[in-house]
Image 1 (tube, rainbow, N blue to C red):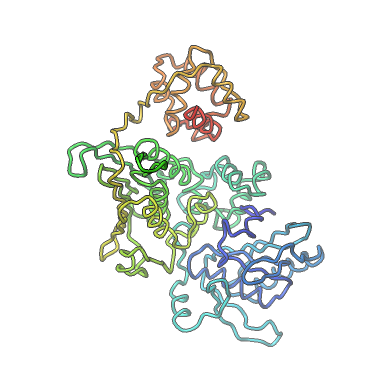
Image 2: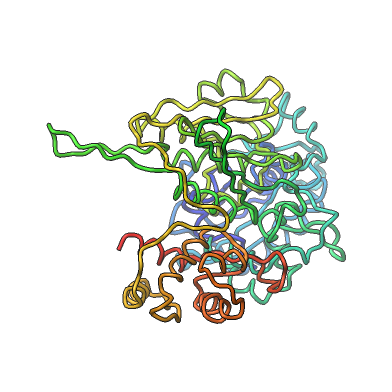
Length: 536
C-alpha cells in the first residue's frame, strides 16, 4: 500500500525533517516500539514520523544503497507489529507498514502519524515477565524517555488533538473531492497517485490519513476539508485571504479589495500570484561608474510568500477572521488571528529570533511543505529577515499583543523602488494584453509541448485576455464579460469548452459541473503558456 508522498523524499529531507525520521538497519522490536510510541505522542505537534527498516544510519543520515531486508522478514515484521501494537503500547497503536524497493533492495517504511488518544506509553522491556512502562518522545532526531517536566507536559496533552487533525462531525466523507486529492498526489509525485483514481474514497481517505471515526461510519478530518473540498469556507467561515490595496495609505478614504477562497493550497497560490502581478515591481538603476545595474524590489517576493504562508499555516481555523494582506505605498502587512504560541517570548519575536515549541496546525504544515510552500521548523521569520536584508529593504517588524490575539508582519517598502501603480483590475475586469496572432499561439504551444486551443485568428486576442483573467478563479459570467460576449452559447462553444478540452482551463468544482458556485481557473499548462507569451 503506497504512502501519500514519494518514498524517495524520505532520503532527501526535502519534505520530512530528520527529526521525524528514524532509520534502522535491522529489526529490533524493543527500539521500534519505543520510536513508534514517541511518534504517536507527537510531543511537538509535527504530525508523527516515519521509521525505515533495512537502512543503516550514520550521523543522522541514511547509508545508501541500503542493506535491505528479505521478503520473509518484511512479512514477519508486519505480523509482529500487529501483535506489539496491542500488547506493548498503551493505548493500542498501529502504524501503516509499506514495503518499498530502493536501489534494488527491499525496505519497510512504517508511517506513524500523531495519535488521537495520547499520551501513549510503551513497555520498557519485551521480556515475558516485564511489567514496567514509560512515556517516550522525540528530542531532535532521538527517541528518549519523557521525564520530569517533559512527562508532566505530555500528560497535560491527554486527548488534546490539534484542530486540523480532528474528525469533523458535521461533514461526510463524500465532501472530500477525489479529483483534488489525486491532483495533490500527482503534484507531490506520490506512488499513490495512480491507484488513487480507482481506489474507493474511504480507502483513499484512510490511506492519506484524512478520515477518522469508526470503520462503518468514517468522517473526514478538518485538514481534509481544508485542502480537498472545493469550498472550505462552508465548513470554516472566513477561511479566506483578503488582499486590500490602500492607494492613499491606510488613513485614506479609498481602498480596493480582492477575496480569495478555495482549497488551502490553491487559495495561497492564487493570492500570491495576484499580489506578484499587481503590486510587486522591480526598479533597475544604472550607474555611470560601473557596468552593473542595481535591481531592487519594492517588496521581495520571497518575504511576501513566507509571510502569507506563515499566516495560513499558523492561523486558527476556529476563529472567524480571515488572513488579511494590507498593501499601501509605505508597506505590505500580513495580519492573522490569533498571535504566536505563548512559548515564544515577545522580546525574541521582535528581534526575529522566535522559535516555537509547538505548532498549532501540524497537518496543515505537513501538506504545505509537501507542496513546497513552506519549510516548517520555525524558518519563516529568518527567511523573511534574509530576503529583506538581501534586497536592501528596511527591517521587517513582527508584532503581537500581550494576549496574543493577533499577529502582524510588516514589510516596509524599499525607498529606492518605484511607486505601485493602481492596478487596473477588479474581479470582472482584466488588464489589456497585446494582440497575439494564431501562428504565435501555435508556435508557443508546440515549444511547450501542450496543445494549442482550437481558436480562430479573429478571437486570439480575446483568448489571451480570458487566460490572463483566469489566473484568479472566475465564474462563467465573469469570464464571458472579459471577452465582451452577450451570447452564452457562443461563449461556451467558441471559448470555454475548447479551453477546457485542451486542458488550459479547469473547473473549481469538477465533481459538480452544473453547480451555481462553479468557477474556472488557469491550469499549469495554461499558466506556462501565459508566462512564455509574456516573455515573447
